[in-house]
Amino acid sequence: MPLNGGTERTTTVIIGTGLSGLAVGAELRRRGVDAIVVDGLDILGAGQPANTASLQRCDAADSDSLRERNEILRHLRNYAASHHMDVRNTTRAVQLTMVGGAPGGNTAGTAAGSPSGKWEVHTPNGILLADNIVLTRCAHSQLRRMLSDFGITVGRNLVAAMRQIGIYLVGVGELITPSPKEVLRQAKTVGQAISATVQATVHPESPAAV
Image 1 (cartoon, rainbow, N blue to C red):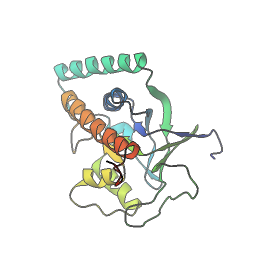
Image 2: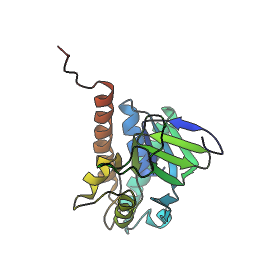
Image 3: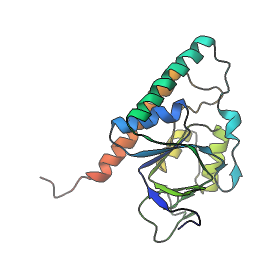
Image 4: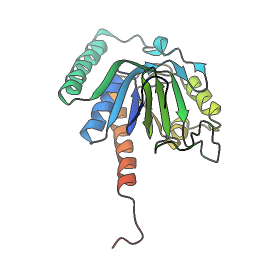
């Protein structure tokens, strides 16, 4: 139990309350997958500072793109309010801990006796226990460092390595922020992937099934 607050269980924690976070949150809500959206991440990996504030936008978008982004964001905020999405604009994650350990036997961050869930997302108000994490603001170099901290070897396919441990990326580009349409496409893809893993857990294939 944390010193301040308790532990909450959810399927997915989405880090980022901007366009990307609300887009994937809305996609999960439409698919019946519970999620908690928090404002951002102050620390990424094993005590490594992640200066996510400076990574919100890296491109020089034109006025039309900004107008489109703002219009979509306004729609998503309305959807979040009307569908009672759990969006915590003033809550930031301060630490990510892998509960089950990395693939291959590395048990960094393992918590004996913890409830089911791959990740503990520590916040000033307590711990959010989740199977999936969605990151919306982060440089690829920081992501690779985080995986290294968890004892995971990353090849060329960073996204595949992240998904192997239940971390998904939406709106995270190599050099520039993806367009609003691309963010929505990524949110839909990630929503489908997480929903599929949830369905596989709830309704696993059984050898005895007729």
